[in-house]
Image (tube, rainbow, N blue to C red; front, side, top):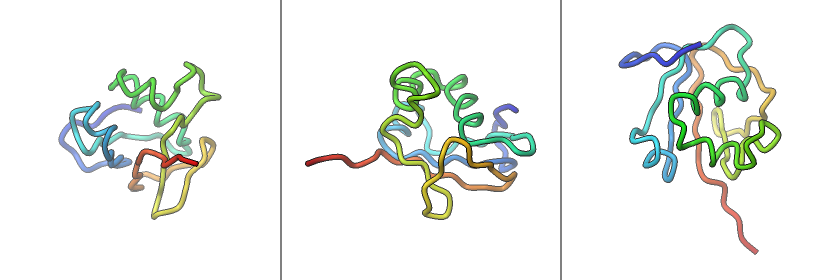
Length: 99
């Protein structure tokens, strides 16, 4: 699994602020193996963009995933174990909290 620079192949991850600001880009394209999970893809993403790690893995562990982010496919929330397909478009937005 690897980053595909300048391509529209694989999974497209659309980052919204603050994640797009941190990564320095709004979209990232990743090649994915068959049956890659959301967690596997985001582990690879933070290898390429380490500053995102504290946001998606705030405690430094995969058990803390996805931190305060909401990860969506077609507007529906994804879990760490959900399997991604080759042409999926994933949106990552900051989760809203409050009281």
